[in-house]
Image (cartoon, rainbow, N blue to C red):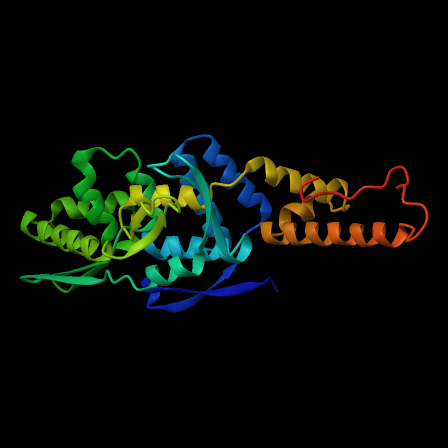
Length: 309
């Protein structure tokens, strides 16, 4: 049985869902998609990664904030519990590095409240926020479609005339048609509720990075339900050095004798752990074979691999 870990998601009544690990191959492909500067391609790979870790969750109604929680937890378990950022001070133009604890960001997101119920005459609408599976429709969205798309993705349930429609069970295009057919007074009421939800959520700061030189924030990002903001945040947390990922893969295969398939099948965190253990083993072997007295000249061919060779 494969290793899994529990992730608590507010949109699933704060119940823990079991999530699997992601492979180094999936992670490399995700990072590679960032180099194409194509948001659609990046979202495709993000969703592929999510579907691998938790099959069916996108179709099950995963919302945009829960998606970020899930991705942060995947990153924490399978890559690193800290997010390392490089930034430039706006005032001094000096560069600096900082470490952000992922669990601190997850804690802030877990407190988000976004489930609301709207009543008008004999119609009841229950809404939350934009669903992760729909985010692809919001890339390069035409302004005149924003109103309908936001409602089509955020509404969870529509009850009218004794009939209940679960929006997650129908296609995005069908949802848009239903929203467009509703009375404007009702849809405006729902949109206003969504705007109020966004305003309340944004009072919490998700990520603040002050400059060590001027104390002025270089990053000042609130919790948000805006798909554009969340997409840029995803790019930030998965912006890795692709060359280093290939180097450690090559080292494990060429020096530690891993098969290519196995190196690709383990997590990035496991790859780094194995490589560090291999380096430690080589160092111990070199130390054990080095004469303690007399001859201090290293023998030909001795060498210790560094972190990435």
